[in-house]
Amino acid sequence: MPPYGRRLSRYSAVALVGATGSGKSALAMRLDPPPALIIACDSMQLYRGLDIGTAKPTRAERTRIPHAMIDVLQLPQTGDAAWWAARCRELIGACNARGVIPLIVGGTGLYLRALLQGLAEIPPERPEIRRRLEAIAARRGIAWLHHMLRRLDPESAARLAGRDRQRILRALAVRLSSGQPLSEWQRRPASPFPLHCPVFVLEVPRPQLYPKLEQRFHAMIAQGWIEEVRWLASLGLDRGHPAMRAVGYRQLLQHIRGALPLEEAIAAGITATRRYAKRQQTWFRHQHPGAIHGDGATLKPMIEQALHR
Image (tube, rainbow, N blue to C red):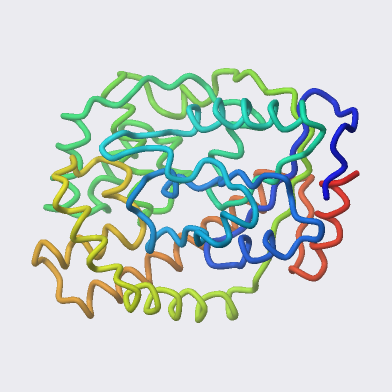
């Protein structure tokens, strides 16, 4: 059992992050002794009903180890990095008051950065502008929008890959909504949170990870993911909603709408998942220079020691 009653600094946590499908949750469940609380660092596991495609921990796993920041929003509600970080701080404080250290597990790097470093205050997008950009992307392609971004926010355009649809749309939506480039907003100082949080990055080489991602995608289809996506489509959410843009869901929604045969939608979803995993690996390699990288066997005893120091 965790050593309750310890004197802790006011805010202490441990983070286990990495690419999608790398086995972060499985590693967290193998820790001995187990963490007192697992806080999900996943932008899609927040939503009730998005279960299969987000690879949520099972009910048995959540019974064995308490989890937080899962199923906390009801569609069409939305959450973002700043909102998640604020809730996470409350959870960390409550755990520390009991003398325990929570484990943050997930792959949404921006959420972890919001917690550890703070975020600049970026004004919200105007929904009508997001809808207009989505329509242009569907009609002309994301490369056309990337060219548009080079004119409106050259700094963001130079930083983003030409196929990074989600971030290109985000940068354009902020520029057109606020009148200021996203890069300018991001340069404004943020207020860091006084948190002691060692970061561990679970590494799986891409030649091993990519086949796992393909197998997992097909397994999710077999588990009923198509019906989950059909339910999502029935809600009539704005196409700019984060759930409608999620990797895998976005491609399968094209099939539900009749735009793609199922086989093509699955292939597109697998390709998008691989690209997302590659971006995650790059993010965690550069965003947390003091992080400890390794495989599960290397990281397991180190995480256990950090949690129960």
